[in-house]
Length: 290
Ligand code: NAD
Image 1 (tube, rainbow, N blue to C red):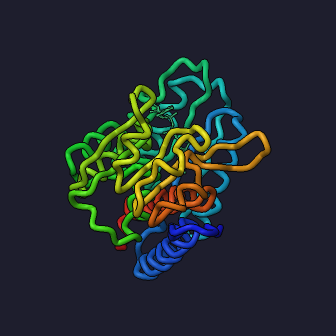
Image 2 (image 1 turned 60 degrees about the horizontal axis):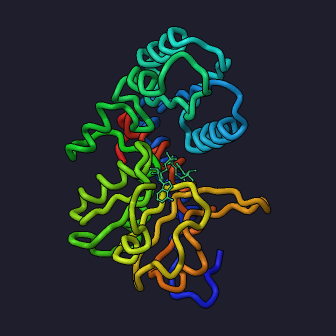
């Protein structure tokens, strides 16, 4: 994607993720040549949500390309909690499986809560980094699997070589899977972090002060281009389909590119990084040196 008449440079997640996947493939091959085990990722998919099926298919295909063994467990939407937890327990004990991913969201109207399912995964096999122990470790700045999308955001931010310490980051969205962990990772880099959400009084004023903006809302083009401070870095996590079928982020891309120094496109920005980080978490869990 080009940014005509803009000042911004593109943070190309597609290119960066391709590089990372190449590196993972080489590391996995070398590990196996030296007698190490092949990394394995188990995907658990409950129900028949079409978008979830597509996401899981992409993740499995990426695994195969990198040399990670993929184990897939599609379950009926009405599967009970005990059956689901039993499967997770089996995967926790399966030596071929180094990472376990339960595709979210789980179907509505089930008799269990998402948090209980995520908590059943052995923390060291938690490829998504959603286990409460791993989220707690993140809060305390300890080493643990990091949620994939936030990890991908940080990797893209590192590409800018910007001095993060002391700079101001504004994160919009406070979900457990994106907004909150991104805020913690930015804080870990000694940034001053503001976490905005649906009750924030004056979102425009908050964003205008940001050296780094992370948008993780799910509202198409909510963040207006002229809110972006000149020279800021804009990382757009949002994936929204407009009525005309076009995919857009949470930021007005072209207008924001007039002000930003760096900006991620949608698609092709944060999205491909999420899969690359999932694979990286799995390869790390298998003890492959990176
Ligand atoms: P979520 O619905 O769980 O959370 C959205 C957050 O946005 C909430 O904290 C809410 O307070 C905040 N919000 C809602 N309206 C707002 C407003 N008007 N002003 C300010 N804040 C507002 O969403 P999520 O799971 O964090 O996902 C956010 C977006 O990121 C979605 O578009 C999703 O599809 C996308 N996403 C992309 C990837 C990827 O790989 N690129 C991964 C996960 C999520």
